[in-house]
Structure formats: C-alpha cells, structure tokens
Amino acid sequence: MNKPQSFRPPSVDTVLRSTAGDLAIAQHGRMATTDAVRHIIERLRGGGPVAASAEQVGRMALDRLEVQSRPSQRPVINLTGTVLHTNLGRALLAEEAIEAVVAAMRAPTNLEYEIEAGQRGERDAHVRGLVRELTGAEDAILVNNNASAVLLVLNTLAKDREAIVSRGELIEIGGAFRMPDIMARAGATLREVGTTNRTHLKDYAEAIGPETGLLMKVHTSNYVVQGFTAEVEPTELAKLARQHELPFVDDLGSGTLIDLSRWGLRREKTVQDALKGGADLVTFSGDKLLGGPQAGIIAGRKDLIAKLAKNPLKRALRLDKLRLAALEATLRLYRDPDRLARRLPTLRLFTRHPAELRGLAERLQPKVAAAIGANWTVEATDCASQIGSGALPLETLPSAALALRPAGKSASSAVEKLAAAFRAVPVPVIGRIAQGTLIFDLRCLEDEALFAAQLDALKPELSDALA
Ligand SMILES: *Cc1c(COP(=O)(O)O)cnc(C)c1O
Image 1: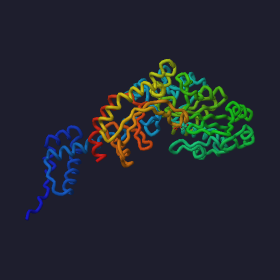
Image 2: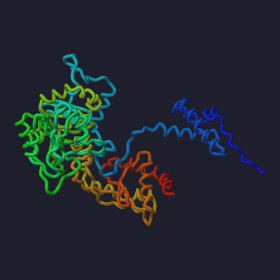
Image 3: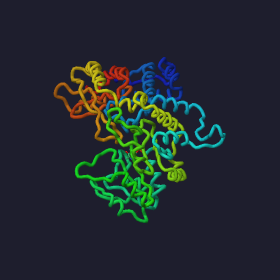
Image 4: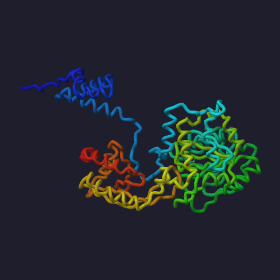
C-alpha cells in the first residue's frame, strides 16, 4: 500500500533565490516578497499533497504581490450612460486643470502668499476674481463641496434661528445629504412652508417672524414635481426677503456658468441668472455641470461672504491647494466659450454627436461579439444617456450602445456573470443591466483602444465566469 507522498515545500530561501523570487524582490522589496512566499508555502501545506517547485512558488508569490500592489482607487471605463456618475468620481478634469494640479503638487506655491507685497495672502483669492468675473457676483468663497457650502451658510446666517424652505424642496441627494439633516447639524431650525406640490408667496410671508434667519430656495436637482404644482419665483422671494431685511439663499446644486442651450442642451438656470434674480447668496458644486474638481462655491453679497469667512467652520471646510489649482484652471476655460466644448471633458461628453457614437458602436460590435463568443448576441443600438449627479434629472442625451444578451435560453445570472467578467479586467468596464441585457452606453468612451485591449483580457475571465 502506497501512502500519498506528503508535500515538501521548497524552503523560503530557495524560492527567494529562484528567477521569479529575484524578480519579485526587485519589484516589491525583500520584506514583502518574503511575506508573500511564506503565505504561499503555508497555503500549499494546508492544501494537501501538491508538488510545487521553487520557481512555481516564486511565480505565485509574484502574482500575489501584483494584486496587493494594485491601487485601491483606479481608473475604470464608464459605460453606464451617466456622464457625471457620483460613484465613479463625477467630472473628469480638463488637461489644463490636470497640469495645474501636477504643478501645485511638485513645488511650493503662493497658496496664501502675495508675491508682490511679500506678505500673507488668502487662498480663495486665486479663484475669487474668476468667480466674480464669470457670475457677476460681488464676492465668493470656496469650500469642500456644495454640502459644505450649504452647511456654512446655514450655520453662519441661521444658527439658533429659522431657515424657511418650501416642503416641495426638502431634497435628499444620493448618499447622506438630506436638507433637513444638514439644517439640524448647522444649528438652524427648519421652518417648512407650503405643501409638497404647492407653495405660495404668502406661505413664506406668514412664516417670517423674529426667529427667521434666512429664506432659502433649493434646486430640486434629482426630481421634478409635476401636475398641480406651484412654486414661488426666486425674484418674488428675493423681494420678500429684502422687505424683511433677510438674506435669500439659492442652493443651485449643479450650478452651471453658461447657457447650455448653445450646445443644444436644455437651458438650465445659471449662477448669473440666480444672482440677477435677486439671490443674496448662491451655492453650487464644482464637480457637477461646472466640470471641475469637488468643491463648493458660494457667490454673492460681499457683506455676507465676509461673515462666512469669519466662521471657524470655514477653516474645517476649506479647499486644499490642489483643488484650488484645478478649480482656477477650470474656471479660466470659461473665458473662451468657443473652445469650451473641446477642452472641458464634461461638456465634450455631453455634446458628442449620436452619429459619432453610432459609428463607434458599429465598429466595436464585431470585436465584442468575437470576444464573448457564440452564446451571446451583441447588438449596436440607440439609447439615452443621462447627465447625472442630479443635474437636469429629466434630460436625456441621444446616444448609442452595445446590448449584450444571452443567445438562447439562459439563467438570469448569466448576464450578471458577464457583467462581473467585464469588471474583472485590468481596467474594469462598468455598464448597466436592464431587462436581462448588459448595456454599454458608449457616450463616455473616448479611448477606443483601451476598451479593445480589455477585450483580450476578458477571454479567460469569461470562460471562468460562465463555466
Ligand atoms: C448636489 C447637490 C448638493 C450637494 O452637493 P455636493 O457638491 O455633492 O456636496 C446640494 N444641493 C443640491 C441642490 C444639489 O444638487
């Protein structure tokens, strides 16, 4: 009777001296390699009688080290059809902004230093002038994001007082931004007026009292109230606020600086419109329609901005030099609207022509079909992209997609597995699943070769996944 030969692993030292071990040390260092080799040997010992050479163990250690050294946050290919996808990092930065960030990372900058005067300066000064120029605001101040902007405004102007908001505008933005919760954290008391579908000027007027800190309008970014509805025009609210010497704040959310109808998109109220309409302060995001880095921008009356600047919370919410550099470079692009759609990725993606996208779909169709095999059909089809991030919730952009479906009868899990296989390639491809179909909306695919390269990596993944 033969007893099974028990596994005798190579020693750690032998593995480290093998070709693969050598390579691993060169790439990842001796300590990490030794740890990985030990881990592989332990695992092989636990797995029963498997023979493995030093070279093989070295290769396994190398694979492990490669997976471990992959950054956690890494590029993906966004084929979801949502251009400003919050989960995928919202706006892509313009090359000009990327260069500005890199320059600011490499060297000391005059972040808070006035070069001519040789004295301490203010960080927001680098962007304030541009915001004033582009929006017509008297002054501006920058914070971490629009949620911070709203928090700072409420905490400064309505702490221990009431902020009057229509019931139709008590938004929740994805994640944990709920207007009533932000109010509470800011120390302001929410004074809801009107009803979900209708709010009138007299509702606001009747709510104003000695406790009132401000009147607020919130852009219903990610939904619309339709049917029997009424809301109060911002100009009316501004007038009412002025009569009572109260600030009127307009939280625009996406905050576009330019009339998008110029590019065939629906006209969205701009920051300039809001200020002209009488808002004392306007708050908006840097990384939604604006197409810049994550930031919150507050523009408006100089005396109110000065109050915000004095709030100690401003220090906690301030922008770092990298995002200020990116924001400054992004805003500069708006000085030349004629070239904006070419230079600002967000606008470039919004304005891609459906025919161009259709052509892309038809070119990629046979490649994808070949990569996933005969069990699937791949069809080039029309679809509708979304702006995303709660901007223009009902507006869709005509686009083109690849629709991937099982050719015959198939378990519904097959499409999930296919989607998972596309996510497992070196640059994960993220689509969306609808009605048993994996849809790749091609609006945001600008690097065709990168996508094609992922198809090669897909094959082994796919046979594993669909086995
Ligand atoms: C998106 C949005 C916010 C939150 O902005 P962030 O920049 O994501 O913090 C607040 N208010 C409105 C109306 C929004 O659309």
